[in-house]
Figure 1: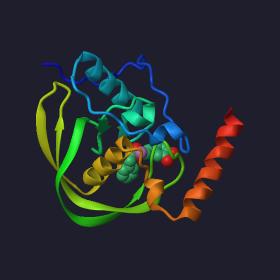
Figure 2: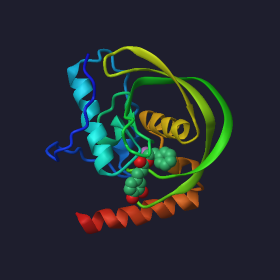
Figure 3: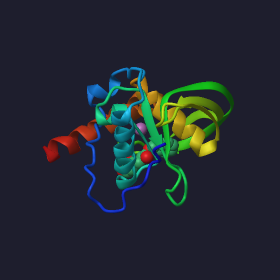
Length: 178
Ligand code: QAP
Ligand code: CO
C-alpha cells in the first residue's frame, strides 16, 4: 500500500493552474477507469500544488487534466490530505452559505449556498471505494471541487453583473502578465 507523503524539500514540479475565463475550465471531466501509479502520482502533485498556492482544494480540471480527481485539505495544520477519485454525492442535508474563493479565480471571494452535510462515495489513491461524511467547510469544498469536474465555477452562482466584473478584472491582469 502506498501512502501519500508530503514533500518537505521544495523540489517537486508545481502544476500550472488555469484561470477564469479560460474555456478549458468548462470541459466535463471523464471518470478514471483504472487508478494506477500515474493517477496516484498526479494526485500527489496536485496536493503539492494546492499546498504551495496555498489552497484548500484543487480539481484536476484546474490543471487542464479532464479526469474526475480532486484533492482537498481543510485542516488547520495542513496534515489531512484527501484524494477523491470519481466522487459521487449519495446523500445531502441542510444549507450553508460560505464565502468561497477559487485558485482559478484569484483574489475574489463571494458567498455561495451549498449543502451543509454530504455523504460522498469515492475511490482513494489505491483504487478502493470509501465513503466520507463531510460537514461545513469540508462539505462545501467537496461540492465546489466536484463542480469543477462538470465545468462549473463558483462565479456561475453569482449575478451576471458580478461575474462579468470578475471576468473583466482577471482578463486585464492576465493581459498585463502576458
Ligand atoms: C475552494 O479554494 C473553496 O483567491 C478551494 O488569491 C474555497 O483553495 C471552497 C485561493 C473556499 C470553500 C471555501 C484563492 C488562494 C485558494 C484566492 C481555494 C487566492 C489564493 C482558494
Ligand atoms: Co475552485
